[in-house]
Image (tube, rainbow, N blue to C red; front, side, top):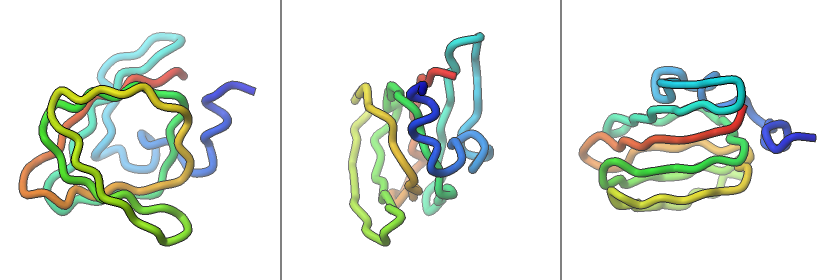
Amino acid sequence: MSTAAVAQTAPPSITASPEIYKVIAENAKYRVISVTWAPGQKDAMHSHPDSAVYVLTDCALRYYLPNGATRDGFPAAGFAVVQAPIESHAVENIGKSDCRLIMFEPK
């Protein structure tokens, strides 16, 4: 089973919230996704396969888990991470300015 299949407990981000997650480049193996949350904007429950993230702006985010728990995160511009598949969650921009990042995902 591919890592892309493991995380599919909820729809992929680009399907769940296309107004926030926009594919800006792709080939047969990978996609590059531009992500922007406006202040107060929250996306729909979604998942991610293995991915890499590069944060473009300072962000203030609230993560919502399926069990009702939340956690806040404050990634700074220039932060980068490679992460394992992420199951169902939603994200809200709790800051006062746009939160922008770039994601890299396998197909």
